[in-house]
Structure formats: structure tokens, C-alpha cells
Image (tube, rainbow, N blue to C red; front, side, top):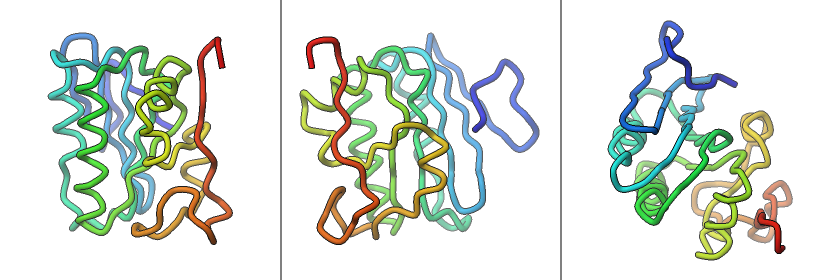
Length: 155
């Protein structure tokens, strides 16, 4: 799984603003958006731009790798929620992978963990075929969908 780098590999695009790094890559029919640093009101444009892409390029899924995201506020959460709706409208699935406990806790507190399909790590996200776009995460008949991911020291 590619990680944000100082110098992106050929074919990989990287945007950086403030303390947020966003790298976009592709593995077959999956667009991989890797996010590192802090996602907030001041840094959100990089992620917003990376998630706004054409579905005409054969992409079937978008996996957002959150493994290196140290902080996410309500602006970041809203961008992810909007991107999920936009992806569904385009006939795509947007899934999340590897959130750190502090970010997973944000999803748990807000209930977003019941809206997103959240994989424990990017590798499992790429292997999982996942439900059809109109199926809710964990819906009956979707045995491969993980339950809500929880995190934090007091859970």
C-alpha cells in the first residue's frame, strides 16, 4: 500500500497543504487516497480535491487510508460523508481503512462508523470485494462487512 512520500512515485499524485498530506494512487479498479497528518478546516481542501475525481476512469471503489491521520475534526468528517454520497451517486463505493483510535473514536461518537465500511487496514480493504453500493454496511447478506470499529482508551 503506497504511503504519502516526499517525492511521489510515477503515476501518483500528491497534494500538501499545512500539516496534511494526501496521496492518490490506483490499484486496478480501486482509487487509493492516503491521508496523513491533521485534517481540519484549514487543511481540508487537499482531501476534498483528491476525493473529487471522475468515475469514467474505470474506478469501482475508493479506499481512503487513514492509517497516518493523527487528527480529524468535523470538517474532515463532513468531507468524507459528502464524498461517500457523491461516490454512491456515481455508482462507486467509498470505504475507509486503518483509522487510528482517535479518528475511530470520532466515527463512533458521531455514528459515522455505522455509515462507512471501515477496514482494519488498507491491505484488507483491497482484498475485500464488499457489498453493492446500495447495501448498508453490515447489512443482512453481507457477511464480509466488518462491524463498527471502536477505539479509545475508555472503550
